Amino acid sequence: MRIRLGPLSRISLSPVARISLGLVSLACCLLLTADLILGMLPDEATIARQIRKNSTENLAVQLAALAQNEDTDGIRRTLHAVVRDNPDVLSVAMRRATGEIAAETGNHERTWVRPTDNKSTLTSVVVPINTTAGAWGQVEVSYRAIAPQTLLGWLRYPSIILTLTMLTGGLLVFYLYLRRTLQHLDPKAAIPERIRSAFDALSEGVLVIDKQGYVMLTNTAFRALHPDARKDHTGKPVEEMEWLVSAVGNHSTTWPWERAMRTKTTVTGETYQIQRQDDRPIKVTVNCAPVVDDREGVRGCLITLDDLSLVEYMNQQLLDTVAQLELAKTQIEQRSRELKHLADHDQLTNALTRRAFLQKAQQIFLQAVDQSAKMTCIMVDIDHFKAINDGYGHLVGDQVIHRLALMLRENAGAQDLVCRYGGEEFCVLVRGDVEHARGIAENLRVIMETDCGPAVIPGGKLKVTASFGVASLESGAGTLAEVIKQADQALYLAKSAGRNRVCTYTEVTAKQGMHAAA
Image (spheres, rainbow, N blue to C red):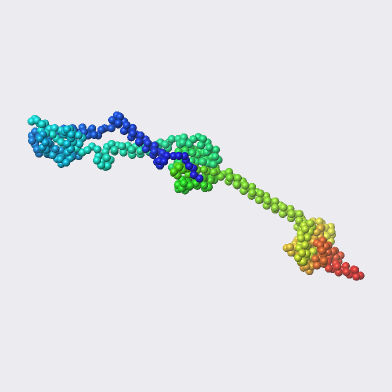
């Protein structure tokens, strides 16, 4: 983007130089007019004519005296002295009344131009010589021309020297004086108030400078960026704004507005941080557009500074809110997992509840049926648990139940399910065949018999045993409920057979077959 000014003068001189040239020209015109009317300047030709006439008359007096005495040598010496001492004299001669030259110097015949009617001119002066004997003759003096005959001569001519001195010296004096004076004038007058009001309505800070870097305009938003910006910097160099210069860099070649004016291209989107002693620093985005005229000449630069503090604040608030939401989400998920764990696990034993067990066991059962995999169910019940509660109290009973659940979890596989099926009864779903499950059950039975009592009451006489019933899909169960029922029947057989033992469903079917045969 470029900002183009309206029609300007085609002269490439600066305004100060043009004004200075106009003032000098006006002064010269006034001086020449005054000379023309009032004759203020001396007439060099008139002065020269009077001087030459007087000099020649004085010379004629001296020569008349010498001619009276017929002092020929004195006449020659006098003539040579005149030519030698006066650079304007080309030649001098004494001509008798008869027309004969009595004495001469300076090659008089070549330089002398006889005036009309023998009247003196500016370059040919004639003075008669009279003695007591009468008219002796005349003195003829040939002078150089007053007007210069060469360019160098004209440059040395006093009037030309005066004119050139006034032009050059006056132009320099006027230029320096005006340049210094205009710096102290109010630059605000160059920009209409309606333009200032329009810039003040912008939310972005606006700074306008000329091509020398002097501030021409600042708007309200710009003055709010820094305490020092509230001062009136109009007409002052932009480098006096130390807070701005330090933000963009101390080298003028790196300033974005200098680059924009140097390259005649727009500089946009450069971000800087402005330090403020009385407040937190602010971040701004700087855009610079060169101001050019119709001849693509740079006249200044329009600089905008967009305060990103509100955006930064809103972004930070948004980040904080997102972080809080993430934390809340994490807490909710954690709480949800805890609630689900509480809902799916028994509080005393940390084993699965019957509802959670049946949901998960159903999936495992269907997967086993679909893949023809092996699955076994173990039902566990603590022997004579009511006697333990009655003899040792419910607290010890709870500890026995807790101990049994711990042993079940430690000996079951990572993918096996342990459930508190009800009261002191547990159900374990094992991935494997009936022999694998029976081995687990037998190992648990031994551990319960040897370790559970001493673990609950160290050094006491408490003895705890448990009975186990095992059933698998191999027994022909068509549903999960049938498998659990078969394991429960095997458990019932173990209890009726004397407790503290492991029975399988095949033993149940074998016993039923014996009863049927009998």
